[in-house]
Length: 110
Image (tube, rainbow, N blue to C red; front, top):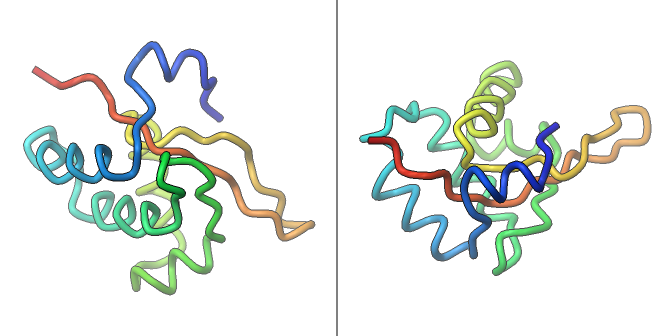
């Protein structure tokens, strides 16, 4: 799980609008896989306007993207590692609580 303070230093948290614009303008040029971009855009549909409160279950993301569970988890890992999303809390399968994410814009890759 990412530390929100370190993420704020590495990049910046973003509104849904600013994040979607940055993702579409930068993601392919900076090497984000098309699958991760697809999962990212699917996640953003669940975000509040300020880019917070993203809580779809893995099963829901699998359903809306048509990707396998393993592919969705790999894409989420890529998005976290590259700074496009920050994991706020980890889900708990036993209680059927989904992980929570928020949108963030990483520093530009040169």
